[in-house]
Length: 342
Image 1 (cartoon, one colour):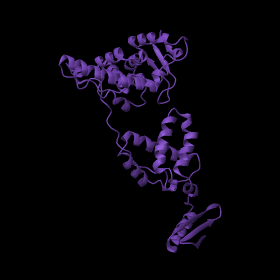
Image 2 (spheres, helix red, strand yellow):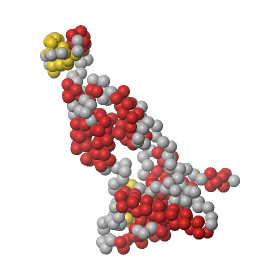
Image 3 (tube, rainbow, N blue to C red):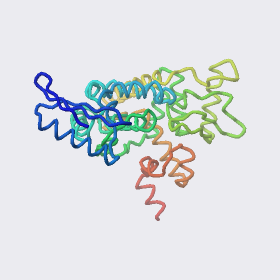
């Protein structure tokens, strides 16, 4: 039964029914309070009422915090999730769950796209979705309208930056870090990610079988990476860096490798420009320009495709979960395809 009462400048409606939690809400007018009360009573009578008290009292920040401590902490993406949760919390953290509607998420999406890359916004929306789904399926929080859905930004086209042999040789020869030279060599020969390379352990490498085992990968599935002759040569050069025959093959951390790579690219670009100036020639507008470490993985997969590996074989090398994801990386050179066509 609905009870209407005046409280200061608002009208409070409370609906009670045996076996269900009491529902209370305030409205600016008595008519609105009565209308809401009748609606809740009707839902209770039909058996379609879903209590929303906890969703009305719980903030998105609270749900994200619990998700981080109970779910994200078990995943390799915990650091990324923490950063995303902080970013989301600055804009939507104070919102109660019942207020997180598709319209609210769409506004957040549009505002963030003004300063963030589409893929970053997609990651934010995915985290919100995962946290709300866990809250409703595992933590007993009821969202009367269900988990809100919103159209996600279109992902940008995959990068088509191929790395030339001249660029690779310049990076390896010119870097001030001998270990970075080895990391670059492994990246372009194995298609391993930066984090996978620096995490390689000696006990997981079989020089006889020419295989490196990766127990932990980005998609949480272990992978065995075939080693080319050149990859074996790089590993043999790296082996003496550490004394033991077990443990890490390399000593450089992932973030240090990235910083060293960026410095090497800038240094080689500057060296190229200065050399061209001395010779009186125009610099190559593409040499060491817009070059990222991840482009080495792209280059490795593309080269493997050009050697004739089919998509299934490429997936085994790269560790991609779906063939559609792999398709972004197999940008074959048109001139190479032309030669095959005859």
